[in-house]
View 1 (cartoon, rainbow, N blue to C red):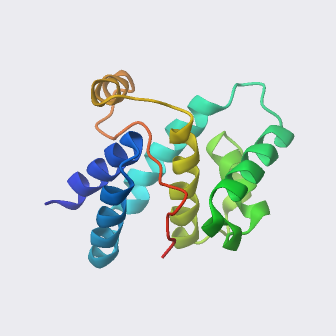
View 2: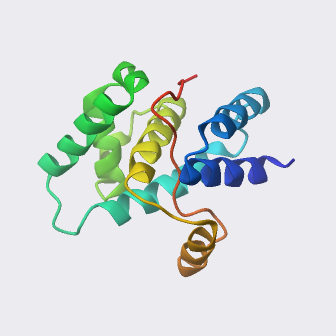
Length: 152
């Protein structure tokens, strides 16, 4: 299976809340070294965050979202809260906030956030395909992970 297919399958499994498959795919991706992960997961994260927040969002809205995410995903507690907020805000257009964020930490945050974002949605495979086409790209629209997600 190609890495690109594995990422697509990961995002679809997260959308279905198929956490056993999510864990298997995360293990396979860990073995492969996450080649291409930053681009695919990053794109899905940016789209999902922009779908979640309105144009009139405030830093307080982002802070509440991060706090909810950290309580829902115990492994997220090891990630720095201020950097998590900055990462969401950067996806919303304040790009200078994450200049010093390592790619590995960013990827961990994106997976956690996607897990949170997908729990608020109930997208079928058809809807995922439709949304992907709507965006004019070949990347999956949204992704996420279970509360039992283990950060690597």
